[in-house]
Length: 121
Image 1 (cartoon, one colour):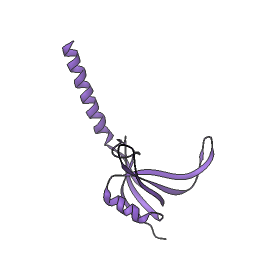
Image 2 (cartoon, one colour):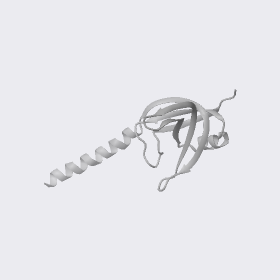
Image 3 (cartoon, helix red, strand yellow):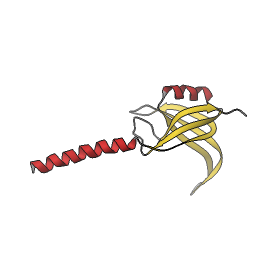
Image 4 (spheres, rainbow, N blue to C red):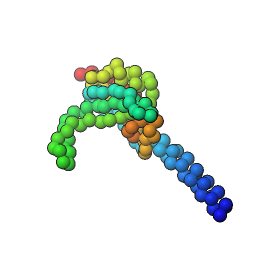
């Protein structure tokens, strides 16, 4: 019984470490552009930087009709947060990495902004 418990504990520890490790893998990379409408720091226990980008156009919801095409993303890097705060309300291009899973202390979304540039018309 003692040997079984030892193996079980080791499997749980290795599984937990593996889950956290896989969660940090980048699933995809890309960029999206639109009007930056919101940059905020929020959270009850873990305060994370979150933002929203209005990518234009409308999309249909299954039950409630139409809604704006809003993209939510998280920011880890303080330099990117400062850039975003300066560009709020403007047309921007946000470069991001998508992770398999987001941890609560990293952000609320799987999309992590890595850079932002202002688009001029």
